[in-house]
Image (cartoon, rainbow, N blue to C red):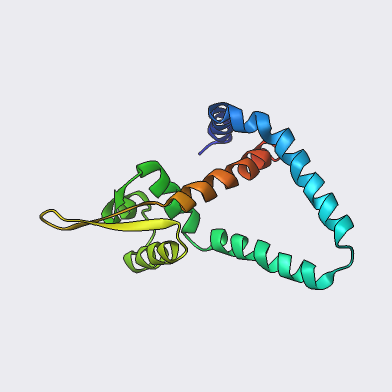
Length: 151
């Protein structure tokens, strides 16, 4: 993808999600207020800081797993997709790795696996309510990033 195409995509995404982008200053202020309150309420409580760090780290580790974001994003866009649909749209992922990622996301409650009783039997994957909520909550961070750090 050329830089012009990337810039065009960023502009289109920011316009498509205009309502979210417009709320970014409020979200940022609310988060900063929470951070300030947290720091002033629990100053130098390093046990608490360590515990909070582990919570933040668990989300980051979840999302940074190889192929995890790609699988989640594709399941989001395809709404309900078969293993082969996912495999076809993520060309460099191996079948075993895709199976592992789908099981991992299912265990985390992000993706649900549904067996469709037809002939032949099919297995379909879709986002759970939690998975959709997680993606929805990550979007503001994503848009804040692309607004302030253009590629």
